[in-house]
Image (tube, rainbow, N blue to C red; front, top):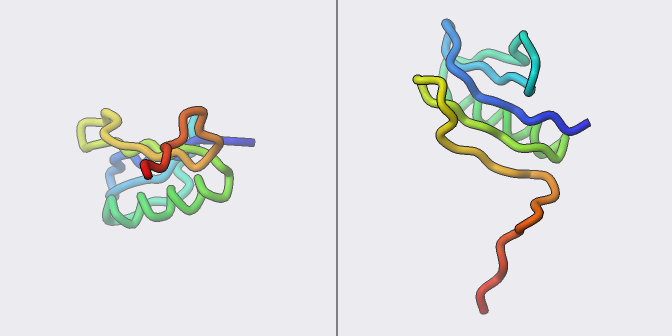
Amino acid sequence: MKKNQHVVPHPEGWAVKGAGNAKATAVYSTQKQAIDRAEDIARNKKADTKIHGTDGKIRAGNSYGNDPFPPRDKK
């Protein structure tokens, strides 16, 4: 099942959480480490990543699933 992965602030650093999960999948000291892990999980599940800032708002994301509007090559 496709479950988007969120990188969110955590008291011990940054957490990776599956959408709707109460508990973190993993906690890292840096946001970069958490993003790398979230992207690995999202690629395997063909899901999306949602990167939250320190204020909790989504600031970035990426799609690893079936994008309904994939980028076109400009040749």
